[in-house]
Length: 341
Ligand SMILES: CC(C)(COP(=O)(O)OP(=O)(O)OC[C@H]1O[C@@H](n2cnc3c(N)ncnc32)[C@H](O)[C@@H]1OP(=O)(O)O)[C@@H](O)C(=O)NCCC(=O)NCCS
Image (cartoon, rainbow, N blue to C red; front, side):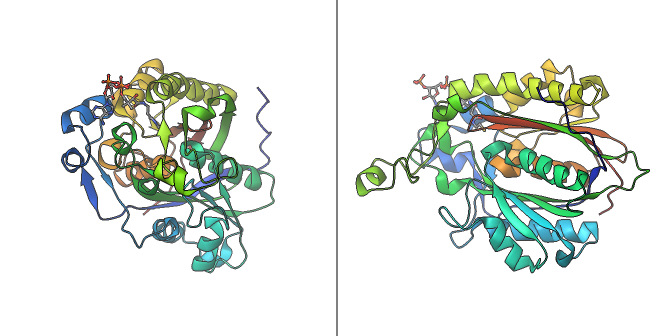
């Protein structure tokens, strides 16, 4: 594994915000759509309900309020932003432009470059590491990182294997250079990919490999397909492993962690990872029960909620872990500063 970059200056989170659509879809309602039950979904996944964007909402409509809240908390105006990164696999427009460009325009962040990161459920963890790299090298000082998804548009509502698992939402953080003397910020990250797993979780058609045709649409190939058991096995393994690797890379270990913020895909995966890390569940943040798997929005939504609930205090050590299609995974180790609402 490559040695982590020597930190020239540290990047720290100074603002955070979130937005979820109003519409709540419960397991009971799903019982009327597919052959499933509240009991099955809760037992196998821990999910009780998820949010669903309205028909007139696009991903940037979720990203904007989350970003505005993060900017307000950071006490930063959009014109001060140097860079906007949107982690998403459900952009406003099919292939281009980047959703980040739409966000940049709507925020009137006139000085900011903007691009998307597509690492699916690991997207926010990847994007946070990218932001940290730009800040550590001194290239940029004020970066907005957003994880935003409308997963409900990728779901085949006749496929019970997938449609019960996902939801919509957005979380955002402002990342800035930490004061030199402050012992805070993103201490390090690890990222990983195993592209041989591309077939386990994907949207088969709509790209250049298999453009959409009437036949493919009739075959529902514009929607997500997943081999759940294999993804589950990968997830259980990688979640603990990625956290251990990221902590080890900065000379720390799981016992140093105050709060574990895992990708919210499934409580069984989260519990297995906590066990592997020997962390009591009080040190693990879980909100998958209320939002389902929101892909790139999952880690920031969990981080924002944990912070709003007072579960993250100045000086706390956090570790985030994302994993998802690609296959991809990643983890960030963060020493929390002093962020006030
Ligand atoms: C999807 C998942 C919850 C299924 O749980 P599981 O314990 O592996 O269940 P199985 O795949 O063994 O399925 C058992 C049965 O339940 C059925 N089933 C699947 N979805 C169902 C649903 N929503 N309701 C009821 N039954 C369902 C299956 O068809 C299967 O039936 P069969 O034995 O007659 O074929 C689990 O595999 C999982 O969480 N995988 C990871 C998914 C994930 O996190 N993806 C995103 C990664 S970012």
